[in-house]
Amino acid sequence: MGDWLLSLVGTPEGARLATLLALTSAMAHAVFGALQKGAHDPWLTRGSIDLWLAGLSAPVALFFVNWPSGLMWPILLGAVAIHFLYKLAMALAYTKAAFTVVYPVVRGTGPVVTVFAAMLLFDENYTAMQWLGVACLSGGILLLALRNLSEETIDLRALKIGLGWALAGGLMVAVYTTYDAWAIRLSGDPFSFLAWFFFLTALDFPLIAWLRYRRMAHRPVPAPLLLRGLAGALIAYISFGGVMIATLVGKVGEAAVLRETSTVFAAFIGWFILKERVGPRKLALMILIALGAVIVEFGRKGG
Image (tube, rainbow, N blue to C red; front, side, top):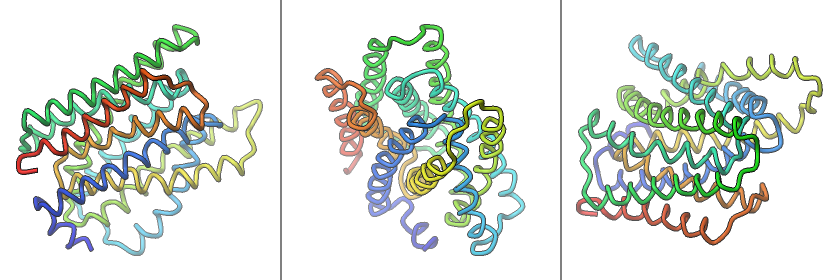
């Protein structure tokens, strides 16, 4: 199947598959973000997710796919470092601010940086219409964050710290999207790369979560936390694996932009599940975000 994916690179069929995968990844990532911010401490939730990711990925990586070549080991370790910084920024941001504030800031800062990086590193080109779509999508996301911010009543200092970490998380999204796209292309064996990626990048937060859990005065019951972690791990395969395959068979920048429609899905999750208020202005901004993604997709030359 890896050979089939590689045969789609640069083809119209690959572009269509990339679009489907990026949008599926967007929906999955919104659920993933809500899981980390939900009922439990964000550090514990992420630790539980990574515990399951490591446990489920280990036998596949160790026994069913090819081991990385000598060159891929430092590349995978680079991915471990980059994703650790991303997860750290997200946990700190979720600790300080609301999901509907943090999530749009993170997702809104990533696409423009990723598109520029894709132009420089992968020699990708974008039409004026696609740039208009990027502007609509990122602008709508950041305006949604500002709208949510105006409704916050928590401590101002905590909110500023949360926004700072959210911006850092957004920059790390651009870094890991570009880096992972480069790494999976270089690997020549996408499924082996993904198996090792999920295994190695999941080894850090279970330890951090365990140390945090031991220091808690009131420890949560483990079973619901572990169940949430299992759900998050299964969603992570779709979210992160889907977008990486999308950047392999399609354009990196387009996949990154389309994935940020996750903000629309996140807004609905915040509205219906987390019971956070959504009014007509937010709905209008969500439409603007979705419109931006549509413009990016159909503004493609020959699209």
